Image (tube, rainbow, N blue to C red):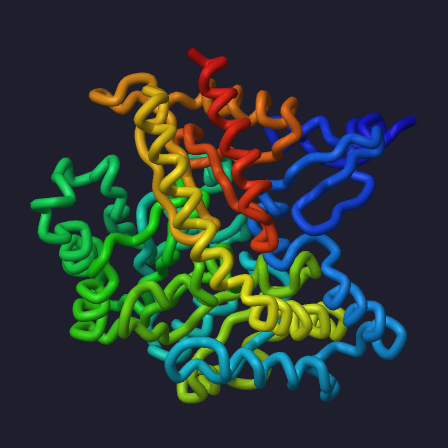
Length: 427
């Protein structure tokens, strides 16, 4: 049997609509190579994970060296140097007073732990999240996910969760226009507190860019307004940087686009270790130390190999100026895509920050009817042209460009050309 046959027989893939017909043999930088010898330009980065590129030599070498020294002991039973070193680095590079990190294995696990920390730190039991948000596929993380497609057949979910309207300017849930709305979606967070909770909210959870929701950046001023509301009610700001962190948005962390905003708790994963499994949540000492013995643990959390990779990854992002590169290249790409928007009626909106870019396709710009079939066709045609992109969004109509941050402008131009040709074919 070949790999695809073994997948069909032995790997549980019933929960995914389809797997892209690419059998990966190896990868390097922004390129993936199939077992058939074909090369693909990767503009999805393993769902925004390999920010420093596939198999970056420095990161791979750091992991190999750690494997030869120590693979596992449980970092919450014994002291492990790489774990301490990474926690120290994170305390220095994350915004505000964030200081103490709990390490786990994934973004969903980070969210689970962060929610529990918020509850024990405040003594409160409710949570506020956003419609269209996505935070993971475990019980609590799905409970605060505002997307029926991800939650179907899994309920009932965790009680005590309220949802505020998504700040989705292209499809405003409040039926307003961004030029004149006065950030009504931010003010609606107070309505959510007053009318959907019992006054016992521990945290408001937010992504700096709604990822699975359609790559929707928060509007300018939104989080500042929301933070004022949260402070009045004594509610913590829990920022989910799982997808936006480590240079993806053209800042080291997506929250840095929101001037003057400091999270009370922040979750990390995906780009933290360039493909090695690692998650984390970080908080100021006064909040982090709220846990009492026995209230939280992770057997594999803070794996020494993953932590060694993360340390090398952060050094690469900083020393090779990949964050600045993402900002510059992202601005260029959004400009080029908006030129395409003038020529292709299917493009309803182009948005993003850094190399986290969404192209929303619609069948009619007036009605904004989602063009989900066309988005999937664009992905198919791009793959046939040797370019791998993602598709997502609440309506499945957003083409996702989230390449490794090492991608060159010439390579990204190739991807944009492939998207343009695919759109031509959809007419």
